[in-house]
Image (cartoon, rainbow over all chains, first blue to last red; front, side):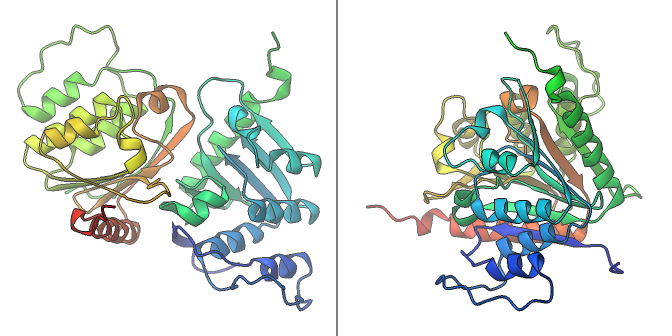
Length: 184
Length: 184
């Protein structure tokens, strides 16, 4: 356990970067990653920091995301799922079907996904790592947002904020239980 | 000066509510507000809390908003401007022209507005009150988002977070200086 709670602010756009080394290290800790043939640098960027925080999950990852189409972030989430982390994903019904959405792929991989049935948007963009670290901001998990938009993400290990968002997550998770769906 | 720094989490959708009494009190402190004839309740809601925080501004209000079409919030901002608070507003070029946008009205009232010239979105949704209180989250300042969407807003009086966002605001404010626009 680190001594000082994480308090980090990430601003986007992020320089494009290769996260293969981060994913490889998370998949097989200690095994040196093979060099990636892609031309992207693997430096310290807002995206690589976000990925690092996600990959720190050991037990659970609760995701509440309006839009999720970034393949790099989807690979990180899939890797956590394979590693035995309990991943739950809430998303927006209108946006999950859009071209490029990663929701189908994550569902196919066995990750639990729930969505709304409303006309209003499920517009949150937050993640909770191990019921301990809150990642929240303006950023939708799309490559366009990461590389082109002005965006912010707060990363906070703060029991009070985590509690508020965890309770919101659980409320939504229950409300979007498929057992409650209505079919017309 | 209050003793304990503000730490508040607001979740939306908010019940619709009347904010006339809040605006009247802010416009003429101490003068009893005339009862509003509208049928909306004036209770404690996420929207009324957000408005209260904004109306606490005494010296400056820096706004960095992707989309701003909520007339109630526009009235609060205009009131602060009239009261002598220095309001600066950064927004997204593509969204400022949409139907219902309040940007034209605020500009017309004499508020300084700057916008991007990029294809990427200026997607932030934050406000800084008196360089002291940060208001940030997923919420665009639209009536649809306030009344229909699942959204979050954090209100934090925290020097470290405020500093990071204030610096981002100043960077964007300078970058979007009309003197730097290019015309083709």
